[in-house]
Image (cartoon, rainbow, N blue to C red; front, side):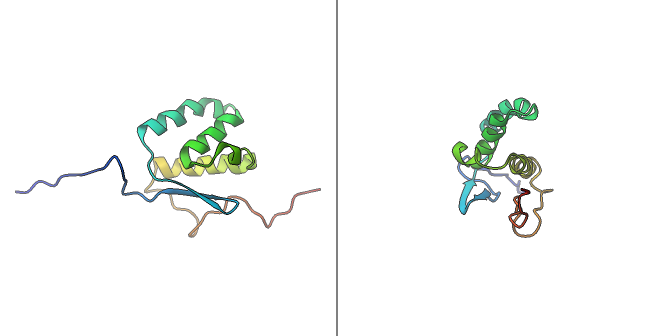
Length: 113
C-alpha cells in the first residue's frame, strides 16, 4: 500500500496571489504566512475601534499596497478592501468575487456638491 504524502513549500503556494489594483497599479501578495497574520492581528483591535492607521497597516500587510497609497483611498473603500481580503485569506474556498473582478469603488457615482 502506497501512502500519499502532502507536500508544501515555504517559498510558493498553491493559491493564486492576492491582487489589488489602485489607480492602474497592481499590487500582489503571493504568500500569507503565520508571521504576516500575527502582524495583521496586532492591528485588528485598534482597527475595529476606528483607528485609521491600523486599517491602512492591515491593508498594507495583506496586499503590499504602500502605506502612502493606502492613505489616499476613501475610508469606506479601505474597510471593504480589508474585509474582502480577510475573507479571501481565511476562507479561500468560500470567497467568490463578483464576476472576474470586484470593483470596490464606483466611479460612475458622482460626489454630492
